[in-house]
Image (cartoon, rainbow, N blue to C red; front, top):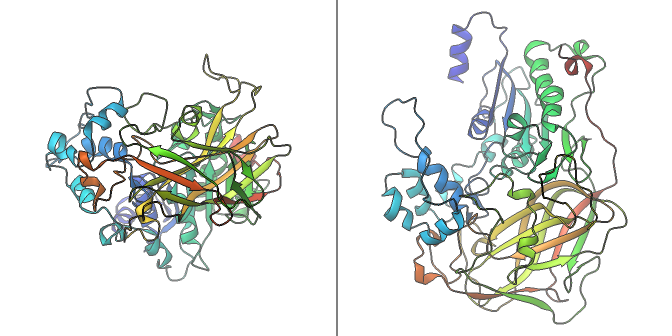
Length: 513
């Protein structure tokens, strides 16, 4: 607010209209400007914004994304008492293999002893707050957006929130900031754009592929020319409607449909759809609820041998892991696999998903990871530009995945141990998708209890603060997932009928005017 006031007074030649945008943390700053906006602020675009640190960036439902925070804070968090133009050097892991590095670390508690020496304040804050207490709740932007002030005499700024379906860092933020802004009536336009991008990929890449998954076009250029450029131009430079004759209007929600590789327009998000369920069966995904009196699958979860989150050798969280081929995980005995029959018709899933599981553990705590996967047919064609030696036949594309730290299944602020070997319901919310499973493909669900080193290891024996777990706290456990009449496990979602490509067109901008 004060910065805008200063600029209006000291910058010459302006027209009195101010815009603001940013990606990642600057995206948070842009969103925060909406809480009490300056009257001159007419257009804001939060892009990949963090909204709540308990569900994005460094945590997912209480599970700690250890390498993401460690690698970031090891350089970014170093104290800089004086102004500098030199970026601090990257942390030297001594190996390109993050799996080995973080296994050797043991748990988060040993980072100070070996590397940080209590000199990085935010790391110490995280370790001191293992639950969703006031420390984290006070940093949640969403309630402030819901209660934001609307300037007198006007509707407030127009908003364009932007996110990537495969943003490994901040997917929760855009999908929750958009509805938080919908709570105030009488405000200016509030739109959402989601594309097939990594973190900030719409500004940093062509957006034609991520990892081995190709999207058929340079989606980032679609966004930059037809959406972002027009959004700011229409609010800052040329606000007259007649300046855009012949242009498709900007929709409420402009979403890229992965699997079908096309843009879709919606007047709300999530769209109204048909509710569907897929129930876990004997290695299958079934349209009907189970009728067996007793049925379950079990596996041994051993913290000494956690499931890797990627087959790649990497120091930390990769940009591509959210579209990675999951065959490496499906072949492990500590990963449960459930698969649909071959689809005869396209199936489009739109909006949020929830995996409602009945589970048990022989210990007192467990993490639960659920992955929704698109299994390509064996004869799938290779797209142009696919890396040498790679083939898409049988590819298991991760469409969406999420983790829930089991102790927070009822309340993120009040951890609760499991009663050993007692069936317990655990709901794992998955972030929104817009994805079409094509004919000839299969739908797969994978369930596991470790995802290393993306998520820190759960000791499985009960400790009050997992971040401070010692090496002898880590024990193997037998986990069960039930699929019986009294304890059915199910994935719930909504579907849409097939749609056409609805890419926006505006000759004024496409021609470079």
